[in-house]
Length: 82
Image (spheres, rainbow, N blue to C red):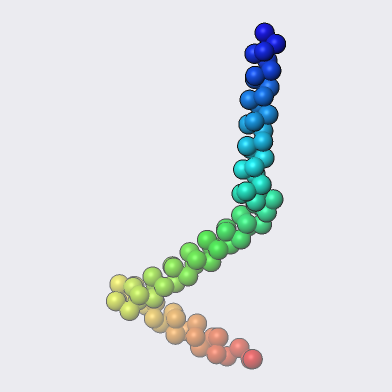
């Protein structure tokens, strides 16, 4: 019976060492900041993709009036003092 318990404890220690190695190799210490930056990148990338798709659809004439809105926003931004 004691031999079985010793083998189980040895197996658990081996698993614990392997998990510690995995944690060390994956750099799990900076997971929070990496997640924040990944989320921000996804939001910015999605916004850029939506703007680019809207622009292309505007050029093709699929979205009527988008060019007028872009021209209006351009005049507003040009009036901002630098």
